[in-house]
Image (tube, rainbow, N blue to C red):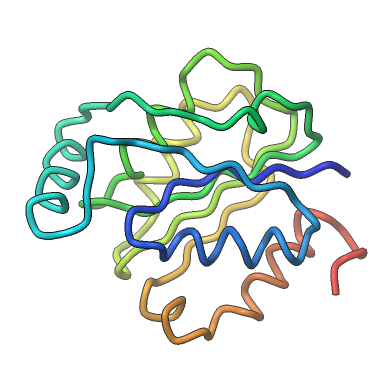
Length: 160
């Protein structure tokens, strides 16, 4: 099964998760790029403000997103209880998505339910699986079991 992981990561936390999943699944990676946000206090305030207001930025995607895949995993952080605006901008952009989609969110520990609902509302099919990870667990490298379980859920028995 050809798998593509499309992700956005401002701090590198979600990138770490995407890389770990790509290694487990033998998946390709495609990073969503967004020039509107930067690391640092002002950048994080802007990101939170836009997230709450629903202001979607322009995003750039590598050519890998246009290749056919059987499963697409869309991953990103939560900002102020919402899926990050670059991820939300990617989803409704009129592109053809595969029939199998899974969602991954990273965050500080608040409930991911509203963020997953926002993402699901933009999808043509129900998500195959969802995974929410806390940033502190990712940074402590204590997510290996969660990644393996998620990979097994979406890929079947062929995952170590």
